[in-house]
Image (cartoon, rainbow, N blue to C red; front, side, top):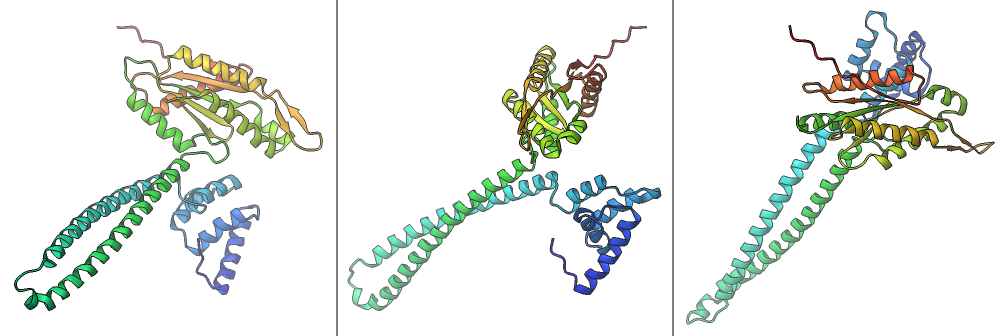
Length: 350
């Protein structure tokens, strides 16, 4: 964002922002400052409304909330907004491309007509001498029109090519809006869309969908011991295992933090458990290199996995909640294991 403020205005906003940050006991880093600067300057009404909601009833704006607000209201468009804009631009490109094609066809047809007309006028006749001056003007104008049409056709062809390139860029932007920047898996928005589509397409006579919720064991301890850079390497390593083993219409996603998810649209419960066990074993047997003083390989990295198969009439939120409960059951049972979400017992008839 470009800030239109003068030096005097920005100095005053700096004072107000620092005052707000001090009241919140906030760390004085650029993210917090950006949030409070845009808040006190009134540039970002959506951000201000979100902050006011958080601070209502004596709440405080901690570092985690600041990062969320910055990502949502300052850093850039949300995935949902990017998708909405991408769809609009894609439709516009379609209209421009079709208009250019039609105009090109019409220009070509008119060019052919002009050529035929010019040829007929150029034929000798009894009154050629009388018509010579007028014919010369008409033929000259025809040639100029033909040249203009030729230039127009070239420009239309170039515009059509640019429109196609723009369409490809929009498609890439839409795809990137649904990907997690660190792991390359689907992000939370991509997960939500994929799960909604899977439930919409689910047939009662076909098994699935099944959902795997996967969480790295002792991840905070791992970050504290080896550092966040190594923690990111662990996340990327787990994502690589998921990419290699989740294929076809199945979707692997980074659900958030150190938690992943796998959507299996048409996989029966037994197949989902088998895949979960395979993924758990692959992670447990992996070793990740820590570059540094010791340049060592770190093992003993494990995941716990909860598995749930969709029940008729169950919403996406309910399916995720059951898989999540199964995940925490796996954690409670000692970690590095797979737990299956129980199906509700049928009530006896009365």
